[in-house]
Amino acid sequence: MTLRLGLVAGAAWAGAVVRWAPPLAVVASMAVMLVAVWTVGRLSPNWAVALGVATAFGLAGWHGAAASSALNEPVPTAVSGRVTLTTDPRTVGRLVSVEVRHGTRLYDATAAGGAAGELVRLRAGESVRVEGSVRPTASDDLWRRSRHVVGRISLTEVAAPAAASGPGALANGVHRAVQRVTSHLPSDNASVVLGVALGDRGAITQELAGDLRAAGLSHLTAASGQHVVLLMAMVSPLLGRLPRWWGLAGGVAVLGGFVVLTRGEPSVLRAGAMGLIVVASGAFARPVKGLGALALAVTGLVIVDPLIVDALGFQLSVLATAGIALFARRIATAIPGPRPVREAVAVTLAAQLAVAPLLVWAFGSMPAIGLATNLLVAPIIGPLMGWTLVAGTPGGLVPAFGFAASLPMQLMAGWVVVVARWGAAAPLSGIDAREATACGLAVLVVVLGWRWRRRVVVGVGVAALGCSLLWGVTASLPIAPGVHDVGSGAVLVAGGGRALLVVDGRVQAGVVADRLRQLELRYIDAVVVRTGSQTAFGVAESVCGSRPPCQTLAPTAEGSGPRTMVVERNVSMALGDQTAHLVVEGGVLVVRIRGTSDSGEVLVL
Image (cartoon, one colour):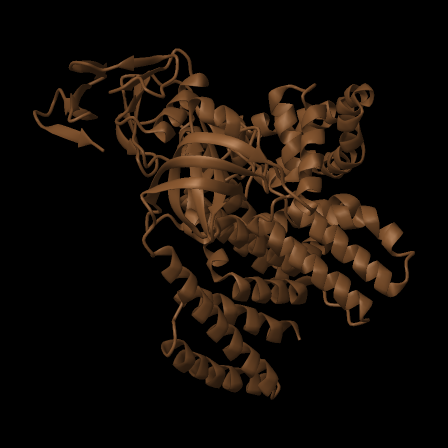
């Protein structure tokens, strides 16, 4: 049964990727059905499965083509009217960013100054009157397109907010109550509490987000399957005492409420769908768990929203869940130690092995320290989430109880912050594709040797694994002089013990932070912002904020931070055997690198 459900889920995923519209989708569906009949027929003749495969492929492809076509329709040049927030606002440098719905279309909206101050106080489900200019989403911006975002609004006015209604109002009440309780905590601790309990990452600084990623802990602040398992474990004793249908209704209500509370991110939808399948199948005395529940959840979600397959969070969530279902039990039986420790190690290791290839492909590296850091924080994640929801909500409503309720949160969240910073600073905080491949091959040798009962092969594999890990440590040496690509829209120029980071509006803060951490670059002389991009200024403020006395160089001071120098004439900076020349041309700050041993110049970005 699991294999057949997996075939249907795979067909739905394939249809969502190719997005063939009729009549091509119909022809392709018939071809897929014939292949499915041949494949499934060799296992066990089952025309229903073949029909399911073809239907899933056709529906996902048809719906995906329509959704992609809608994203390519022209957008207005300006928006004026009332919009509804679909996410919670988050602060990026001096900007406040949020996703909004205007009519039937979704936009990313950003605001600065007074408009940002009005926007940051709102929550998902609430509406506000806005005015601003619009530019369409880039065709290669998969993250926004996966969320059906058709454009980006630069807000100039935000006024007349209105409250949400129904479940959204209740969810916002919980969010605001927990925020009032966490106001007693240090900012990093408070942001961890909000992330772990509610999936609210809006208050997490770029520096802390980078530490969490490098330590392999970023999944803790993105509500997912772990949160659903913990939540259902807390309510199961009560639901188990109810009659079957009342228990089913209660389970559906809890899962639906949690999805609304955590804003329906892709990983939450996957976890909620799986939880619903498990609860419903149990009520009908036909339990579906593990890979079967995952396959059904993926099939349903992908058919309803084919663009979700482009969301990295959804991809990681599916891979991690599949890895746990496939490998966790086997790993637990193969390693020694007490059962609770073996199971915790097995779940973490299985999930990390499953997502490792995708992490290396997406970010260029993966956190090798993740196994240790996850084991260190695992015992307190459940209590932190439970205490925040059970005690934090009433603590926010009753101020006298709020301070007492916040003390356990401070201790538990503080431990997560400490572990994240320790893991990010560890020599193996990140290994690149070469190191990951070497480690993977070494692990494969160990597994094969174990299976063949060949101690020599196991020994060779262990030695190879140790060598590959040592390779990762020795690779973290001081950065070589020259020009280094550190992500789209960002270049690092190093030489003579000095470093210059050049960024433009395409820069991605998370990618730059991860790459700088991989290079173990703790000191940067200056960040050059080539244009007046608020995104670039936000990255410059984050990078320089953690590496004083770093300075920002820009062609304009509008929207810049306190340590910004406006370049009005040519500026030169010595970088060992190289010299960086900065000059403003057409309102853009141009950077050219000249080497003393080479008369030629290299244009940066």
